Image 1: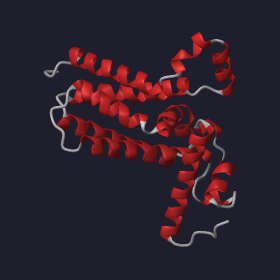
Image 2: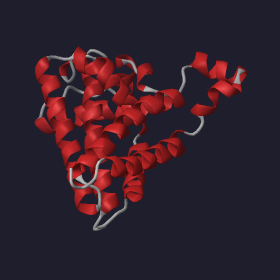
Image 3: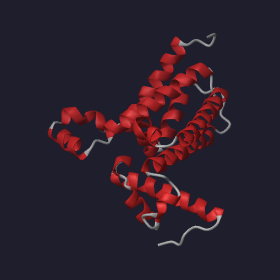
Image 4: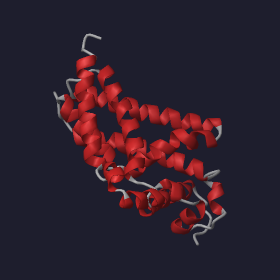
Length: 219
């Protein structure tokens, strides 16, 4: 086990180690719902009681991971856009879809943030999450406005749809063991669980096209 962190840098490394452990476990186990504090601290090489010095509970740890994922999504979009200009709605939807698909734990966490994580932490921690998540969201919208022919209102709609579709469809595409067995027995019920990435991409492209038609630039 690692010794207790003494410096600010050491503490930050422990924060990051716990987040990395939680993320890798979510990937390995098939979702954040299977992640436990004990498994996270074991993987991070910390004593099981030590996590309380960094996070009050599992929910706060996962909310911190969701916050970090917002920053990663923002950075992924920025890196993908580069110096591109005049992108079509289809191209914008492709960028938005491909970047969020590359962050599977984020897609999973988007469901849990709303259902439980925000309500399981104190108000100041919830405030910090909202502040940083909204800042990342607004930066993403701003970058896409500059890079494309879509308006801010159209892009706000596209991002809202992205968050909802990515969160909901990720859960469908990663069923519990019981549902996975059921889908094996009745394949007609499970076909929607087989194509998370492609399905999300074309749904967002259809959404982008529809938003351009229903929200003209003059509005």
